Image (cartoon, rainbow, N blue to C red; front, side):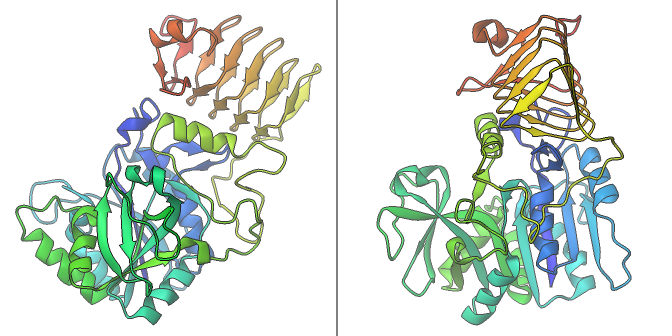
Length: 403
């Protein structure tokens, strides 16, 4: 088994969080980066030969993988970033399928029987081994993971039309009239961007796609439809996936965090007493960066309620509610932080107010400044999502000379 993780996404809709990093490297959940979820799923399933294909502003992603996901290699295991290398000429990847085609040496060197190709920027738990077993049983060339979404919302996804046996009859990209599932006309299988291939079939399809000048060389847009046309593609129903330690509340959780609002909402899923997504499942852990920092500290009456607070944080005489604070965040006396996401190294000054905001790494909110209170004023300087979430880019000082 070889794992290939597609991590070259530019993530324009997450700007300014992707201004200085690839989307899979964006910090998430107080202690992780987005790529940690797919890598945790693969490793927990026992798949430890994983190539992460990178391209866009990949330095922080490469460093994170090298520092957090290193292995001894004693049994031949490895998790390694693979940058675009122009192996087939002076050009970068032109699509997700081209990324794999240009990295064909990874397949020929490893000689796997099956290949799992997963995306790098979704928040979820899944046991890929169960999907692989379903693929082997079906005899398909490719198996596509599908999650059930309300049919009224499915137009935003790549949609799967399948018969009762699970064979995919149509693969539709953001259709106006999404198809129902065989057993429920009110829901649609949306593609999760996770695939299992029989190696020989994938290699053949990639070579044919590379020779097609009219192709966009995209896995979902070109490769999967080619298999569907040959009656060789099956859907794997995500609801059938049983993850050890999952609760009824978070079973089947999957979020595409491709926009600021989706990214923000996924964080708010973490902070309730009984969270929609439970980070504390020790039977299927999400592994993240381990920092040499002291525990969080609350002094001078400072407190946090319904919040996630990372290592090294100091909340001094301040109030934090319904928020996610990453490591090494300081909130000073009289400050109020509500319904917000604060990434590593953020400083919130005395008497400052932060509401419904995402503050990227090392942002400084100067004493007495406000973010998320007057959205019209915020729009003049910062990004404000359609849902009214203010995003302040990496390293900016609000109330200083650059903010």
